Length: 409
Ligand SMILES: Cc1cc2nc3c(=O)[nH]c(=O)nc-3n(C[C@H](O)[C@H](O)[C@H](O)COP(=O)(O)OP(=O)(O)OC[C@H]3O[C@@H](n4cnc5c(N)ncnc54)[C@H](O)[C@@H]3O)c2cc1C
Image 1 (cartoon, protein in one colour):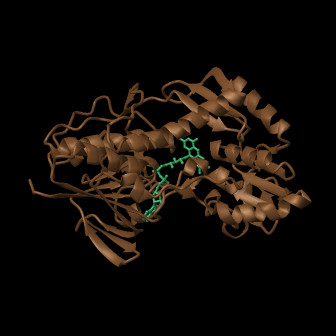
Image 2: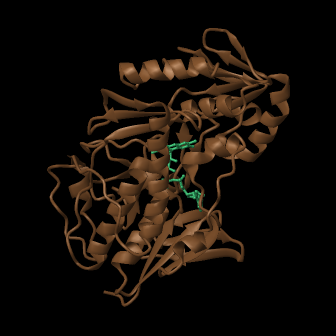
Image 3: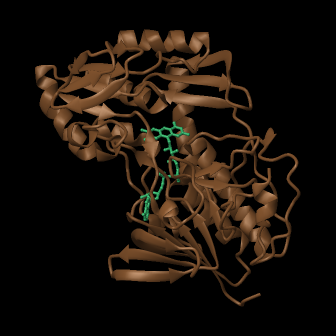
């Protein structure tokens, strides 16, 4: 084994930050250099971006501060290219372009609102990530009771629409969804959601597929038009093209296909986690994009990598869902209990209790990131395994799962 192992972690969102902290913890007494690369110098709590967009101030923590006291070296810069053959990453950093070499890579570049899904969205809609300009625009149209159209009826669209309607009651908020409102919730959950939308005065356009956006109007598949002053596209997330450009096996969305041990199925030196990763088709576990899955995936990859460095066997990922938490503004929330595979149970928590649980969980995540600087703290339910039949590979440094082993499932 080399005396110093270089590990690069790309992306310092929930997944990358947690992976860096857990790995630093587990390799405290080993000769391992960990470098965390991120485009911004501050931690973006994406789960609160709808609050930013509605004009609330969410304190942004400095990544360097979050890493204080650990052995993680932080490089601020945008990863521009990945060369899995030479094992290098090209980073456009403030000091200039740098080429960083790695022995092992953890890929955690996350996701973003994909404005390319709907023609015209780039020109005529905002992504919630553009929260500063979006808020300025909302602020301008609020006094004249401006119209806001949110496209997408998933959890993100619901959180955005309710936050806007609650914070800016003068706005006329509408949502367009290709399905029905709350279709993934229990009857009680869907009923509560419908009541909340009604109370907040949000108009819902169900079974509406937006085909294209033009200035101040959305054109639908049924040949109808929905007018707006501000449109927010929450119809889906996309991922960075970096992995695909580097030749890693990815799904049509560009997420890296991983095996049960969270290795890229084509490049075992690379672990992929968070929104940027997806289990290969043969896996018996599917995880949706979310902070709820990003953190367990991150910890598991860090633990597996620490095992590999210590010459121990890696373990297949295990996970189980318990609840889905949806904020409906600052005063109401909906906690939907689910079974291990994310199917809704009948029970829900609503109103202020629901809002308090959601808030507690968001705080718990940020506290966990602080505590992880010192202790391996975070836990999650292990009700399902990614590949129950997968034999445990021997993964000393440089020996990852054999390709035949991971592609034949
Ligand atoms: C409004 C909103 C509300 C949400 N609410 C919830 C919720 O309640 N519960 C839940 O489970 N999930 C929620 N999500 C989803 C959740 O935020 C994401 O699933 C989660 O952030 C994924 O974590 P990640 O670390 O994989 O990616 P990200 O959080 O996206 O982090 C990726 C990091 O990589 C960096 N990066 C990207 N490209 C590059 C590059 N080329 N070079 C360098 N750095 C780069 C980014 O700057 C970022 O810091 C919500 C999302 C939104 C938008």
